Length: 386
Image (cartoon, rainbow, N blue to C red; front, side, top):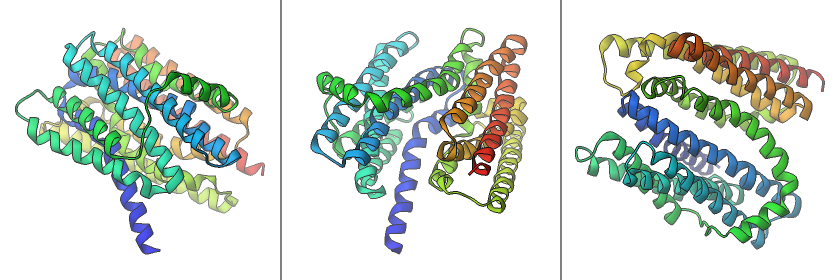
């Protein structure tokens, strides 16, 4: 029993490190301009992961629950996942070619395509074999990433280093991790047709979410400079470790809690959110005061309060969003999604138009705080009505 617990904990740790390695390395090593360009690419990768979940992974789970496992199911999933990965990889490479040399754009294509395929096969392995199924692929990613960094450091610029390490690590994970499939469009089309009843509602909800979280960021590009966009995106990236914590407890949010336990959860999450906000804000101020060189994080000094507020609100909002997803009806979820996404789309844009970078970051912090309040209210109502 203890051995299984250690394996599960090790798998979660490896998965978190593999997920954090590229964006966190970029955050801590790149200055504002290259980080802004990297963010444009990474947002497309994030959108690809969202599409892969809605088109492939979550329909795969529903099909497996409804009909049990089958060879055709596995093959269809792998082919569809590979098509999504290759399509988004090519699209991202074309976008990258507008501001990077073709060699870097091609490297980006490999990193994004292999990265999406890797996440898909990892998801399938965990569904079929539990957390142990992800260990080999995650370990290959971490070893590949760690091996490239010391070899290239000092010989190429930091941006090239991050992109090459990402591409090599993702490719190593695909080749050495759980079995993946070839991008077979005919099989992918059949998969989409056979699972349309699952894909449509999942894709609909995720596209609304992506419109605010990803599309909203792109709307700021014409308003902010590339340098300012890099600083703006750094605020969100600082909250990445906190999101890993909330993702880890997501399965617990499906439990029906008594009113007393729900109040304890609220108090505990609020304490965690406020603590995270204060610690983050003070840490950024300390980095600014000491003049530490931590990439674009060093530029966040004037926005320490907003960055801390965003991180704290993200912890609270994610926790109660997961709880609402588990307990609320479809209409309630749509109400929350429209309120949160609408605010997250409008507030940063209005802030940027009226006060530039400061307005955009403040708008993001306000939207995150409002969204946290919305999801707490809706989760509380859903549980009270049971």
